[in-house]
Length: 494
Ligand SMILES: Cc1ncc(COP(=O)(O)O)c(C=O)c1O
Image 1 (cartoon, protein in one colour):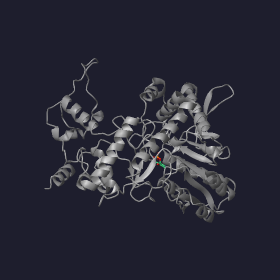
Image 2 (cartoon, helix red, strand yellow; image 1 turned 90 degrees about the vertical axis):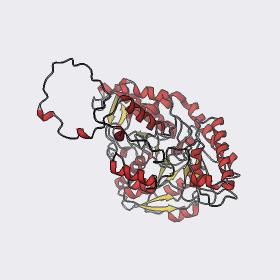
Image 3 (tube, rainbow, N blue to C red; image 1 turned 30 degrees about the horizontal axis):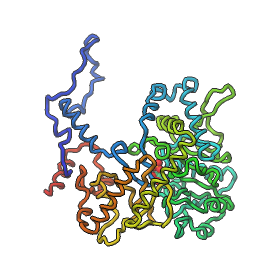
Image 4 (spheres, rainbow, N blue to C red; image 1 turned 30 degrees about the vertical axis):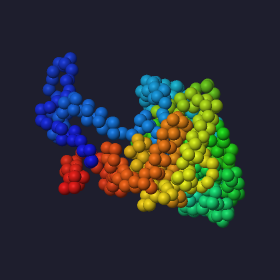
């Protein structure tokens, strides 16, 4: 509301128009009365073509995206999405394929899905993959439903608990609760690993499984991962791998070989399919042979004649998504894997880890590290700048917007006070990282010398500080003249 621009409805005036319909090339005829729209037309704004184009172009320029700058959101892996993938996803054979055209007419698309299942399985060390889920969170939900189905199929009915570390992403406990299981929190130790004594005290014959992110949400490799898996397995529980941080270990470590039974891949993180404002994403899942019969279908297999067909595993938990999952995302992920190959994928992780440590080592003297360790693909710092009074992580994040950067993730993981989680990814150049570091250091200096600059930030963005709670609770998602007038009056202090 600060730089208030008139809404498209406010620019509207009766009689303006911006379209020229093509000349009629069929005989003119009266439309049947029952097909004529009776209402709703009065609400359409009337504008010229330049007004419409300028309106939408101006709005699009307010957008921040990975094509306009670095987005260092930790845990999100906001890497550049190569344009080649967009081209592949737009091939008519993929983009115009109809999900009901049948296996016979979909061989190319099915082959791509089959190969992607195979590649994801190979990269992660799992026996079977389903491409159904639409996001990481839905992959988690799938995994815990599969765990439950597996235990029940063995008559093991009393496994009602899921172990979740206190550093976990909120979707982990939410998932376990949605499946109707009890969340048992496991503490982290001083090195940022799972506290082994606490884990030993909490596993039992009630344990359905443990949900673990590795590297974990502190950006650290779980050093005892093999032992953790052994402890959980020793009581009959299963290991769920939250693959959100897979970008750190591609071609280096295979979760299936570390003791995980099931994992989701965030194709929109690690495999560079766009995040796209809440969707569509893809949270494909992989698992061991023992859990494969429970996977959601349809999956793709090759039959004796060498053609590809859809099938649903015998004891499948059912569908997670209509048709074949978010197919366009699968094309992009396949293209990414094929472009990079084995060595390229390994290099992705090596550079991602190097970049995160480069940032960490240049900032840790002024932004204390959550845990003093070499990090993986992201680093968790704290917005507690020595000598700064009354400055919070939120102020630092908002000030970064004035320096032209999308802020990192803040206040996550919850166990780190004033957390500032930075994930630069492998796609940022050293030059960009240096400019980011300079900006962060300049902000730390301002925090001590001119703290109001931080309290007032952002000053250069289209909007200043938003009432985030109100924006989430009372979103105004379409034009409403009265609501707009009220907001405008509030912003102008009337
Ligand atoms: C550690 C972790 N787990 C799970 C998720 C959920 O993934 P999605 O956003 O694809 O649902 C996220 C998302 O940021 C995450 O960071």
